[in-house]
Image (tube, rainbow, N blue to C red):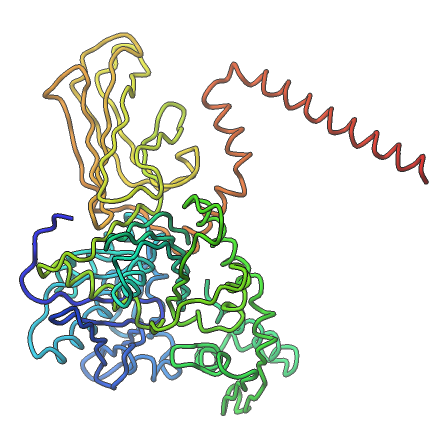
Length: 552
């Protein structure tokens, strides 16, 4: 792709919601997953602050997780979910952390793990993010890397990294289309990629956690059976979370992935009471059946976005993320593809870090056998008259990308400036999209409404970071640009998923709203058509009811 080669090794980091992993590609593209100081190849994405004489001791990874039940208020899990929030460590000395700082602590742990293995300082890294992460979240991840002392040379999507891991272990010269099903501890992505002569091109990408369902089941069971509300006891909740994880987590082939029943057992659970209850695979599947089905809905929509008309066009199904070991997930995926078995051979827990290390090797050596083309996760555009979203870079555009939209005209007489509001999202109105930034293009020659015009160009780099330029079409020298690196608001994973889901569920509502904004004089015609359509349906229903009555 023409990237300047980087001196020194580039590590690959899977910054996961629940677990993180680090890998490095050595000479000859041999990729090694690096074990931490506890001998484990994955590390909990947990940070804790334990009180000591000097104030607070910071604990990372296993050390943080192991003391969580005794120190629940100062232990942070699932830092990806903290996008847009702050964390306070309470005590005599109160300190507030940003999510970037907490993420940086996890990344720093991965950096230390790699340095201990390689025996030298590590600076450069490729870090992965969920495919649906927006521009702000990607930039926040890069910022976290900087805080950790890393030069994040590339941000890549997790399913894309999984595909790279698969491609390295296969014949990358053979043309084929693969579907990457990435179901981790707290994120879900599906991507369809085309591999042709060593080129990886992402055709489309789309984007839950099962622990909360199991937790709620046991909380309700305990309240019903023992008349105790464990939600008021942080230590009890911490113990319950740990045991629910033990029953569900499949990072090391945990119980519900290989057996039909697990038992949740907690000594001195609450008020000195011991707790022991079974959790069958059937119960687990029933609690999460709707979540499993939603993953299949995303698979179908992603195939549609990728213009895959026949499921037989998918040559391989690649599983990424520990939760893909859940039997029901595999069974539903197999059924969705008419009995096709997913590909084996890649450890789902390690595939993302593996692929990130491969990308790092591509950037740091002369090895150009594999070429990676990623896509934008959401559409990028500007606000036009009436608050309509004018898309400049559509969703699933291959990046790096540069797109322009012209004839953005003045809306008032003698207007001398354009206000450019930049948004990201799939809804027709900008009020329902994510605001990214704004700037003004001044110095427009006064003229009647609709005469002056500007051209807006958006450029997305290989990391998915956005730059926007506005140019006065009447002047060669009048233009202004911004690089959207900072951010004012960020979305959680749930909000991003909701945004995409709402765009689908409210398509008709959006169409009506956009019609009102675009042209008020079409409203009467629209209402006339709507009335006619309703009348026809009412007449149809009346006739059918009359017919049924006659037959009866």
